[in-house]
Each structure stands twice: as structure tokens, then as C-alpha cells.
Length: 236
Image 1 (tube, rainbow, N blue to C red):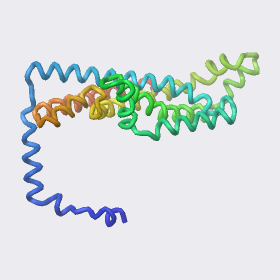
Image 2: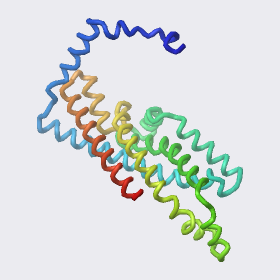
Image 3: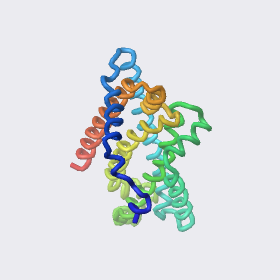
Image 4: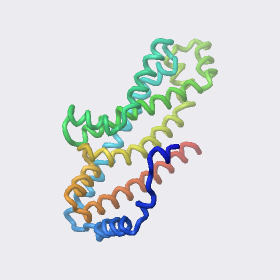
């Protein structure tokens, strides 16, 4: 039904004319721009992208944990419903929309990208944290409460040790996603490699765009490998 409704014409896509146009465009990206000046700019853009994604994920993990506690029902029904509505609202708005709003609020640059990632990721990671807390066995914390412990120490020593590895794993996984997203947010002026790619493509500077694309691929590959290694260490 979707195929019929959209009226997709794959014959046009795989026609000789379309293939020749795509090949001509792809060839224009080679060779990539390897001048020292542009490689230095790409390196700075890479560091900026890493910083945007890391700080955005860290802020989201902190805010997500604060909202996950009431969302998991730790403070009653009304705070639970309120926190879940806030988390649903934050993650229902895509990162690109948040970035566009933050550009108006904070101006062009990495600050807007960091805020956009933090807001959307808070909604995603807060929900995951809340479900983790809900599924955590209550017996250790209850045992501490029965022994005379106060609620906060019982939570910190009875519940948190069981959930910290999973919370860190979720945060690392979201960081992987945010690395890719931070590169895309540059298309709305949020800094990093994405902004360099947007400028290069807008000015029809395909060799420079290819340099940025290679930097993105290398960055994503390295972060995926590092994050997978860290998660294995936590699990093992």
C-alpha cells in the first residue's frame, strides 16, 4: 500500500541518464582536499564534534537521572505522570528542531548543538533510566531500610550498585548515536563537522566535502570501537 501510495519510480532511478549524473557527481568529490590548512580545519571540526556530543550526552545523563527518579514512581503518582510527560515531550521533538530553536536562543555555534543534543537525549535516556529503576529488584534497598537505614543511603547502597553498569552502558550507546547526530546538526548552524560539510556542499566544493565525510567516517568508527570496548569491560 505504501509503495502504491508513494508512486515510486525505480525505473527512473536506475535509468542510464540518472546513473551517468550520479557517477559524474560522485567523481567530482575526488581527490579529497588534503592541503595542510584544510586538514587542520577538519581536525578542529572533529574535536568540536566530539566535544558537542560528549557534553550533550553528559548533561542528558545527569538530567535524565533526575527525571528518571520520579518517572520510576519513587515519589508518587503525580510526580511520575509529570516526569513522564516531560520526557515524552523532550524526545518527541527531533534533534534538528531543537537545534534550530537553540540557534535562535543561543546563536550559531557549538553551544546550540550541545543544548539540542542534551534536550532530546534527556527524553530518551531518562525513559531508559526510569525503566531500569523500575525493573531493579527492591530487596537490597528494603533490607537496608529494615536495618534502620534512611531512604537516601538505602537507595545509594541498595539500588544504585545494581543499575550503574546498565546506566553507563545506555549512556555510552547514546553517545555513539550523538556523535553521528552532532555531525548532522551542523546543517542548521550548530558547529562541528556538519557545519563544515554544509558550507562545502553549499559552495560546490566537493573535494573539501569529501575530506569532511572521511573525517566523519573515521570518527564514527573509532567511537563505535571505543564504546563497544568500554561496554564489554563493564559487562565482564
